[in-house]
Image 1 (spheres, one colour):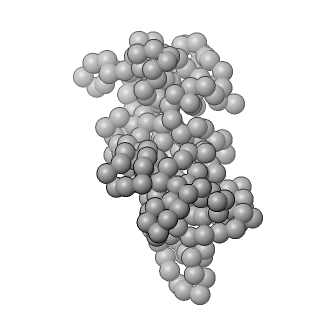
Image 2: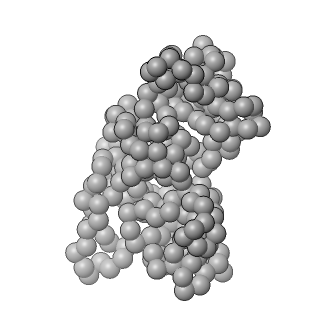
Length: 238
């Protein structure tokens, strides 16, 4: 089976297995196409074209499209950059005047829309709650946040922190700059967290909520002066 689809709602969780008790591993956002590799009346296994992430979503939330439409959606859309954009649905039923609220990060076809700076996107995202598997302003995890920011630069990062750490070139601490990614964990074989470097001493990351905290050569320190994460490496994405 090699069918193609997108979703009929603003966002939906991707599950590791085909049941709601399974672990949530990521999510599909409005406007993102995927291939369907397995399917029954209740559940379908999909692979996102954006980052090749696989998992299961409920079949009733799928809108079936052809390969050409999937490629157009994948290549010719931009991410929504404001909260709850009131957007007319056109790929479900063009004869009906249906609207949907979209989160920051969902994909729409508006080539003339001016894209904001990453600083403005970060400002929008500050305070968004942490959500395991989240990739948008309705809740986001650490690697979902860095992936989202790079989406606005038209750069496709892998979904998970350990895979994002394999991209780009390593930068020594002290030579880092805005836009570099900092990775954290026990060791480089056990990367558990990633954040976006905003300045020499400031990191933006999703931890509890999306927030800014102090970055040092040792790691992240919270507002109480307690170290919360051990710095492993910094990568620059070209």
